[in-house]
Image 1: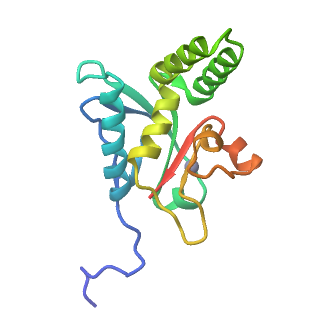
Image 2 (image 1 turned 45 degrees about the vertical axis):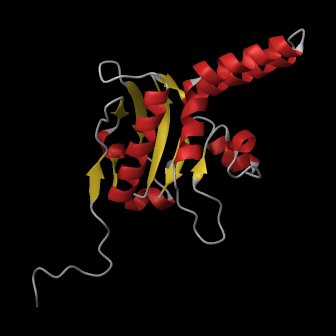
Length: 178
Ligand SMILES: [Zn+2]
């Protein structure tokens, strides 16, 4: 038997997510080990997100990852992002919802527009989600939605019909798989 031959069903090796120029991964080191295609896509999108958000090599944005256990996580094809700039995504979502309420209560349209524009500029949780959605290419298993879920999925897509249970499960993190 050829000792160098690998079994056909051998899982792809995992690689560590490395810090980019404008962002750096934090959190559980095990959670940062993913398959190479996912590492490459995440790094590309996070770099663009961080640069657009004004981060630099000297002042990179931290993106916190924590381990997931189900489905794609078992084979390193998924990552769970729990925080950005040292603030948890649940808190970013609370701030976002507060801004929406403030906009709804604004005295006129211009005032509402200003509140929303400010939230879009300063809410890094929402910006991270939008960057993953607009710039990333994620898995879409046959018969399933695109594998990007988070606190903003129902409002921003891609899967606006996400059920209450799945949305609740992603109230404090963003899940991507590739
Ligand atoms: Zn996950």
